[in-house]
Length: 292
Image (cartoon, rainbow, N blue to C red; front, side, top):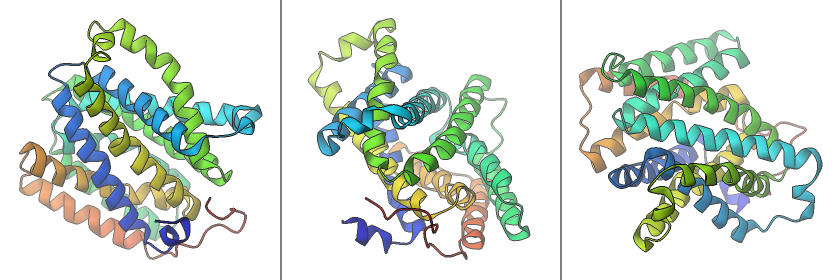
């Protein structure tokens, strides 16, 4: 679909598509945890996404210079750190629960970015829904919750820095540069892990890693760049509440993780929060350039 066509698609629809792609990829990644550590899977995901994006976008020399490359690098490192922390959480918690804990980051961004009564009500409703989806599993895996909270902090950074990168007008090119920069320290993750380097010799593992990279990084993050050009950070963060819902559905279909009654209540609350906050229009900011 062209950029013009994407602009006509409602933001919640783009989120559902991106979220479904992301968590199908996460479900595939869970299958790799039997052979590889979560950190290695996350590293391979970012590296594969970097290769795909470089081949697709082929960013020019200007993308590797000045402040632009600095912000791209910060974005890439925040995204890579978020992915590592998230996979470590998923290895210890159900997919929907890990996403719900991670969502504390976007909730904080939304709460700080807007103080209008309707927006605050939407954030509170979304937070309550996410808490229900999490199903209060704090005592089950403290390490999983800790990793989830680390992912939450990095997700907040992803939103703030990603908005700046998107408004610069070259979001996809800068994402390719950022992921490439982030791949450098991730090589250390592969070397430090006993099975990391060995994974590179397995065609099936590499194929799955590329699949995870495309499904969980290229598709959803590319759609994020489209949406970030159209929305403020507060509304973007609230719309991210759709992701725990999507993750719960994917966990049910692909991993057999059946949600309970409380999680169902949480899903309804999250959908209501998105509907409440989504009454604002989708028009881009006046100073934002058209999507590339």
